[in-house]
Length: 65
Image (cartoon, rainbow, N blue to C red):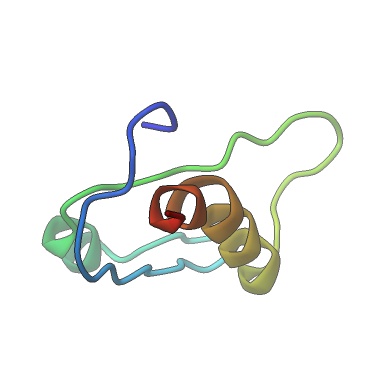
């Protein structure tokens, strides 16, 4: 997923909770799901850190002209 550009137009980013992630119905309503790889001793990121990583790596590069 990381090697594909973000879709054109408006994008809504939905961030799940640290332990549970997204609810089933929320996941089913999404067009694409992105999961951040966790390496080392980090088990999870808080929502703000996760959102920052997704915006930086996935959404923002495809919005630059």
